[in-house]
Image 1 (cartoon, rainbow, N blue to C red):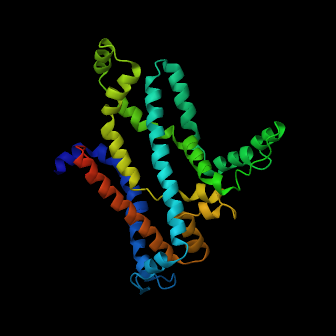
Image 2: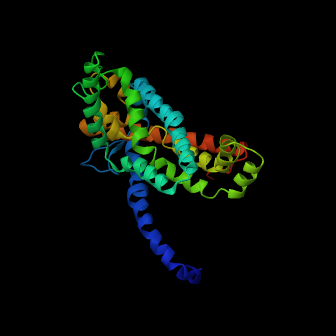
Image 3: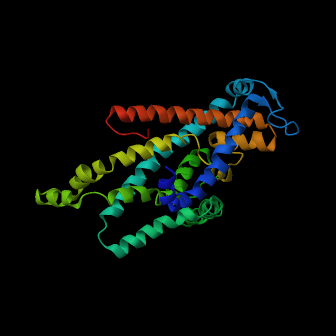
Length: 297
C-alpha cells in the first residue's frame, strides 16, 4: 500500500488543499452542532455549558414565526427547484446545439460572467433598474403606465429573487451538463439523422437520456441543500414591507443568533435545516434506485 501511495504521491499532493479545506471548514465546525442541545455561554465554552436537551427545538416548533419561516423558505426553495434547475438543463442543451464555435464561446462567456459578481452588486443592479427612481419606473412614467413598487411589494419579492438567481447562476450551472453532453456518442446523432429524425426528436430521444444519470445525481445533491437559500441575497432584498414573505431560516438565524446572541437557538434552527436536507437526500436516492438509476451511494 505504501509503495502504491508513493507512486501516486503527486495525486495526493493535489488532493491536499481540498482535504485541508474540508477538514477546517466542513468537518471541524460540526462540533458546533452540540450547541443546539446546550445553553451555550461563550465564557464557559462548548464543553462546560449546561445541557438542555431538545429545549431549543421545542421553542422553534412552538414559536409563532415558525410556520411563516417554513412556508417562505419552502416556497423559494420549491421555485428554485422547479424553475432554476430545469433552466440550467435547457440552457446547456441549447448551448450544445450551437455549431458556430466562436459564437458558442461568446455566449458561454456572457452567461458565465454574472456568477462572479457578488450578491451586493446584483442587488445594486436590481435597485438601479427597479427602484422607485430606477430605469424601469422612469420608462413606465414616460409611457404613462405609472410607477410599480417592485422592491417594496410582497407580490414581487419571490419573482425578483428567482430572476436574480437565474441571471446570476444559470450559466454557471450548465458547466457539468455541458461536460456530460460532450461525452455523448456522435454516431447516435448521425444514425438518427439518417432515419429522418428532427433536431427536437434527437434532443428528446438521445441528448436528454444520455445525461439522465447526471441530472438525477445533481438533483439529489441539490435536495441536500433544499432549505439553504443563501443568506446574503435574501438579506439584501428584505425590507419592512416584504419581510412577511421574505424572511427565511437563514435571515432568521442571523437576526436571532448574531444580533440577539442566542447562539444555541440559532444552532438548533440550522440543525433542523440540515436534518430536512438529509432526509430529502435519502428519500430521493432511494427513489432514484427504484427507477433504475445509480444514485449517489
